[in-house]
Image 1 (cartoon, one colour):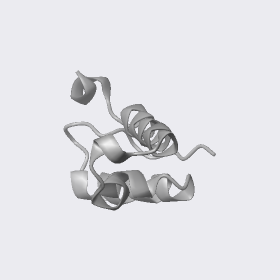
Image 2: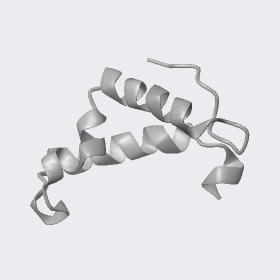
Image 3: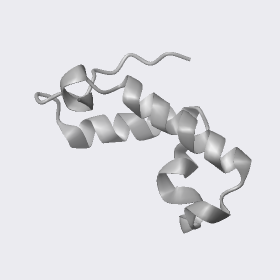
Image 4: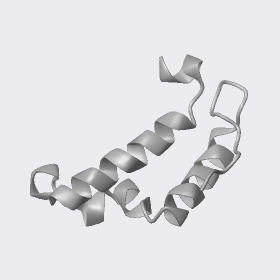
Length: 70
């Protein structure tokens, strides 16, 4: 699914963008990556948790403006 939210840039209110990003990740069933998989240490993550973390991170990257991403 594609969601049309503004990219995070210097004019975007971060708190609103954050709520929308959490909703997008929740819809993709990736929101548990934001909570570090119940605060488990990275070394104990399963391969599936690592994959889900990378997918969540890629979604966040896609919603950042180039100025912020640099």
